[in-house]
Length: 237
Image 1 (cartoon, rainbow, N blue to C red):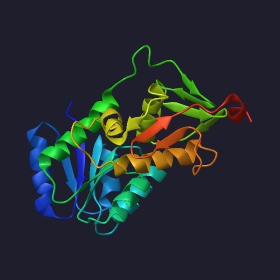
Image 2: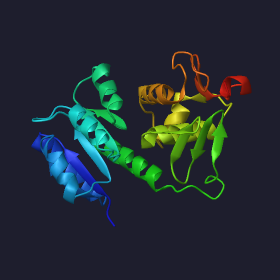
Image 3: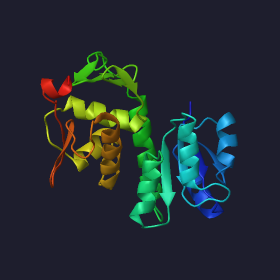
């Protein structure tokens, strides 16, 4: 079956360009032109990925992201923005977007990012990966995609889950931001590493006792991040 992409952009020329290129490589594409129309479209179209512009009439991209996530709709979202302001990009990630691209962009790069997201979704855990993973008081069930902390379930976005599992598989190893982009986002080209920093921040907020003094995800200055296991005394305090 063709994978379905919902394109949300109020500029017809951009929507047509995206639609043409996505259909060219075999995607089924549906376009809408304002934020409110997203919620009607997903009822019948059920997209695998949403390409969502930040500046939209009726409801902007941030509001759309926030509402989708509040409804527990975890469909991957790539945010498009014409703005260079970092705060706008981070706002998109903070409200549930998985990735962002700045206009103007290459249709080929957009296709690559969509394909990377779909590859991650379609990759099922192997027999060895399906066993639970424990670090400190965190328990990860890869096949159910569930995480608990101190016996209580914690809710992670799909990308936060992938990031935590990848860090656990490489516990004790310092990973650069580019390595994390390759391993978690499946980027085979240079990407904006601030995406990694924002997702690390969100993950810390959910698993650390104090995100400012993390015990699990440690920053290695000028290099990247490392997942460490707190001491038994700290873990079971």
